[in-house]
Length: 337
Ligand code: LMR
Image (cartoon, rainbow, N blue to C red; front, side):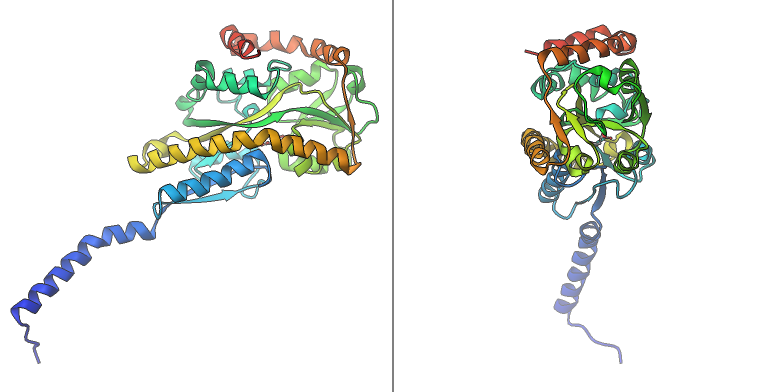
């Protein structure tokens, strides 16, 4: 039997169908947020780990239903050797490698690895916030990488499996794990030591089994990776910096809807402020925990000791000045008070 419709009812049904049709694209969007994978190699409780989690919280709050941020800490997806490649392939959308890991993409960024260039993290911050530092965020767009922000970790300390770690002579002939950076390689060669590039996730075991004798890192990385449990001495050298650039795939970023890009930029700016405020406190607290653990011994350096380290590492500057540019080095030096 054919159903009979009254004209008013028919109108209502047509209207309902129209509403459903119009709402469908909206519904589809609500069901399929843009998934943003943020991969990094450190633990959640480190400055970078905290920054990534804050970014997720803020991005999802600012863009409800539009984005979903998935954070993968501790090299869960892949290690630092693969993350830049994965970003360019579109397997992940955000990473925040240490500034030491970009030298295949721009030589300029090697500035951050020059030993004893920055007095402290505040000087690093002034340089990054100034025109020279901000310019470096765009130095790799030609290679498909867009820098969104700098995130702090902190100053590097040196550790070894030996009792004595006070003067440059004490590391002669020792094997050190380094990040993938030619400047850091030159730095350890200047110390007459043997550097070995190695992914972050492999360091603990390499120290434990004696594949390498030592490494350089921040207090927060040493503590969260338990390096102090497999090292005898940590010298408070503050000879360099480990900071990060949050980078995205430029093509992916430029292709985002404008409102999403805006929301993500705001979330990134706020997460940056948050993480950078925490970095110093996390490192100081972790230094204290290491000292209290009674595992590795902390060696304090005198002014003369520090001067000796500085002098031994000095040739590295000359070696890389051409690639980095004198103007950039001068700008960095100016950021020291
Ligand atoms: C390292 O490889 O030692 C660091 O760059 C790890 C990190 O991301 O802090």
